[in-house]
Length: 267
Image 1 (cartoon, rainbow, N blue to C red):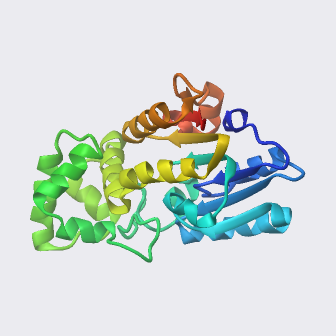
Image 2: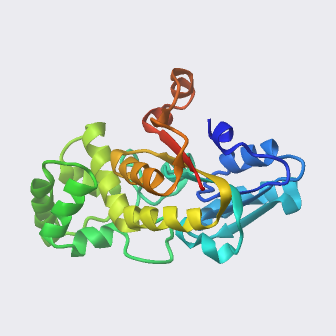
């Protein structure tokens, strides 16, 4: 569906603004063969390992930079199409060791870029009860955000919340529906994701050629709402309703079940 919307052609220049494991980049390179080029960026330094095989395989057709997608204007390039896949990559969930998943006991970091900013453990130890409640209510859509904030404050008076299992213990449930929302909220706050998204949509659109296409895959309603409004206000919408994963894709990749794809064309 992404390739259908972007319509990569040989000689075109495309942006993968969220490189991750490189799956979309490789698909764009193959679809734009033999002369299409892809510039991929990611704020997570660990993703550089996944770029090396593509550099060897595609040579000058592929360029990789450690960069946030809201900084793409630094590339000084105009693109025929751009993709933002806002979800965590499977590698970040499964093997980063940074506490993105509640199913393994890891240090509670949650930063995409571990060289900057406050990690999740520090946020939980320093944020006011009011800020914690706002984070869980707004970013996790949790009606019990105030109760959880009070439990966190009570726990941190005794000892720091350093690991994922420490946090799960404070939350007091093993229900995935509850845990996923709380971990999502904390990750959004740590990485300032919604502000980055709003700024990034503008920055990427500014780097599109006239007629260029922006495609965005979001994974929760907060992101989708921002993307929907932006496409409607700044681009010619190409998707009346978001494209969702087929039943077959969900069977192959269950993590795609909440994905929503929207796209727009720059006039």
